[in-house]
Length: 600
Ligand SMILES: *[C@@H]1O[C@H](CO)[C@@H](O)[C@H](O)[C@H]1NC(C)=O
Ligand SMILES: *[C@@H]1O[C@H](CO)[C@@H](O)[C@H](O)[C@H]1NC(C)=O
Ligand SMILES: *[C@@H]1O[C@H](CO)[C@@H](O)[C@H](O)[C@H]1NC(C)=O
Ligand SMILES: *[C@@H]1O[C@H](CO)[C@@H](O)[C@H](O)[C@H]1NC(C)=O
Ligand SMILES: *[C@@H]1O[C@H](CO)[C@@H](O)[C@H](O)[C@H]1NC(C)=O
Ligand SMILES: *[C@@H]1O[C@H](CO)[C@@H](O)[C@H](O)[C@H]1NC(C)=O
Ligand SMILES: *[C@@H]1O[C@H](CO)[C@@H](O)[C@H](O)[C@H]1NC(C)=O
Ligand SMILES: *[C@@H]1O[C@H](CO)[C@@H](O)[C@H](O)[C@H]1NC(C)=O
Ligand SMILES: *[C@@H]1O[C@H](CO)[C@@H](O)[C@H](O)[C@H]1NC(C)=O
Ligand SMILES: *[C@@H]1O[C@H](CO)[C@@H](O)[C@H](O)[C@H]1NC(C)=O
Ligand SMILES: *[C@@H]1O[C@H](CO)[C@@H](O)[C@H](O)[C@H]1NC(C)=O
Ligand SMILES: CC(=O)N[C@H]1CO[C@H](CO)[C@@H](O)[C@@H]1O
Image (cartoon, rainbow, N blue to C red; front, side, top):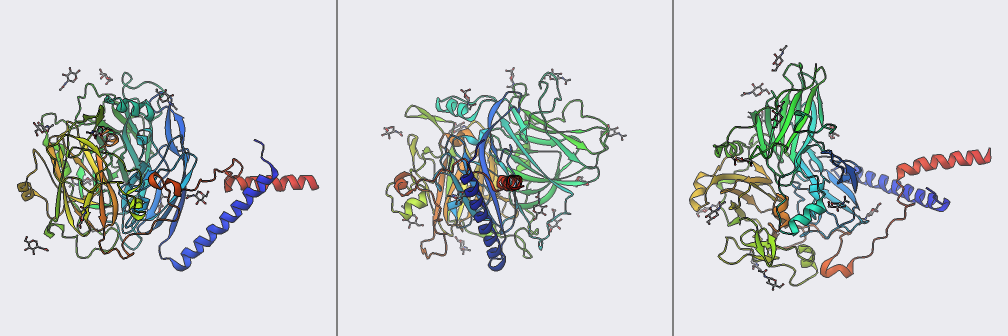
């Protein structure tokens, strides 16, 4: 590639400038701010890989699929400059990271204008008072079905002990159903009112299954190997990043000791296998206490489906001891045998308890927050039903409303007095009226204590997520929720998390302390239901807005919709100035070499 002399030097000047700015920022932090800052650059682009043996377009971050880990610690400031190198709009969202008072950084259409192709946008937020295991992903246009996800870890501060011995290693595991069709093709299927059908497989860390069965798994598929040493204990952070399939996770002959669920330490309990629903994250402590006569299977298999039809929807990785004597062989460890037992999986979910004496973000000598003695101020029953046809298109609804995104992000519209952008009339019960598309959101009361009941009248397993918060999962049962159901809530040690499963024909109740101002997305994590409109927002405003409760609009905010005229064109970088500092160091070396050669 020919690069002119002037662009060489301009890129050098830019880089040197960037370098000094960086130093300046660093020293500012060292001198004035107590909380460290970590910075990342995310280049989000397409790559072609063949996880199931068929070449396909997937979304990578910095050419990695899954993307790089964000490794933060409680209260760190995190800066992520996201470069959209796709051919369509992009936003990255960080579910579970609470963005306190700062929904400007949340990365969904109700809070942010999308980053157009060839543009970049810098997220800048604090991991305030949080610990735990999360994952980020692209929130628009069904893109998560193509990848773009990666791990987001918030470590305990060194002065706060974790409630278990320091593990010997930290291993991230992404499990998820997968289609060999790209996300634009999947989108088209949904747009024409069709079902996506049975997935083509389950990926583990972006890779297809180990060939445990020569009939079921074609030859030549690259699989994931997890390398471990005998006798050691590892923390496995497992995330279901898939589209809609609940997965049963298990490791042959090994016990999973549950230790954390989306940002809170749990009572440590042993499981042979664990159901992980779409969007959920868990940490398990796993001790390598087996002999190394062979490798062991690590399995993520489809749950609550007809197994004879879904056999291929099984992810298989290999747990490899450093002293292993041979490959894994034979059948996979059995999935739970509960075809006639609807309660096993729900009981497992209810067995997850918070460890009230474990410290997370801050020391916790008094034990956990006594949520059970707080009076409920608002109740929203959000009912989901199978997709319905509205005005000729197939849509998914909550309380009969299929959400349409506002033209302008909600708080930005507020700040600029844009009228008619959204409506604050989301019903708190399913209403007896025809389903409709609407830009209707929940008018939630700041400092209220809200009860949300997800009533799943759909035929599929669901999971629901709320951004900006974690909620106490106090109850779950089959049938229809009534006020009497409150009598069976766990008012003592329910786990606080941000994504909960809701079984078909059942309800799940969560309690939320509304202390985080902003607008926060509440949605189905099942990507197809979400895409078809199963979401809304909680708008939570301090009525005594005094400038201290919500962060100001960030300087680099993007404008769109009714405010599109305020947006300045972003200067697209020429190919020369997009040369990174790393490359420029190489170039500098080359220039010096060239000069040395010329003058010698
Ligand atoms: C993450 O950060 C912590 C604390 O700074 C450090 O101890 C750990 O080694 C890092 N882990 C990874 C995987 O980079
Ligand atoms: C885009 O990236 C450049 C650095 O390459 C940065 O200076 C600029 O602030 C970024 N733009 C936005 C809107 O964040
Ligand atoms: C709960 O946390 C405490 C404090 O760190 C720890 O000592 C204890 O082992 C944990 N209990 C369980 C059952 O996980
Ligand atoms: C996505 O899939 C569609 C349908 O199979 C195909 O026409 C299109 O070329 C694919 N796009 C890319 C970039 O692979
Ligand atoms: C492989 O899977 C097929 C299809 O389920 C089954 O019939 C066969 O017994 C399996 N082979 C082995 C070696 O388990
Ligand atoms: C839980 O599993 C660990 C091995 O990972 C074992 O040492 C421990 O005894 C088990 N605890 C119970 C209560 O079964
Ligand atoms: C090693 O473990 C496997 C599986 O538990 C068992 O079948 C085998 O007999 C064991 N071998 C030795 C040498 O202990
Ligand atoms: C599973 O699917 C197979 C093949 O279509 C069918 O024969 C069988 O009856 C189904 N089993 C159940 C429990 O629905
Ligand atoms: C909760 O409500 C009850 C009666 O409805 C009332 O007596 C009690 O004081 C309230 N508790 C708090 C903490 O507000
Ligand atoms: C159907 O579309 C028409 C025209 O856009 C609109 O007026 C009407 O409200 C829509 N009906 C529903 C149920 O959304
Ligand atoms: C939203 O709720 C607040 C009370 O929390 C109320 O004052 C306000 O009128 C409500 N707004 C709408 C549009 O219903
Ligand atoms: C799947 C499911 O739970 N369906 C129920 C939805 O609600 C109607 C009545 O409101 C029931 O008849 C269905 O069985």
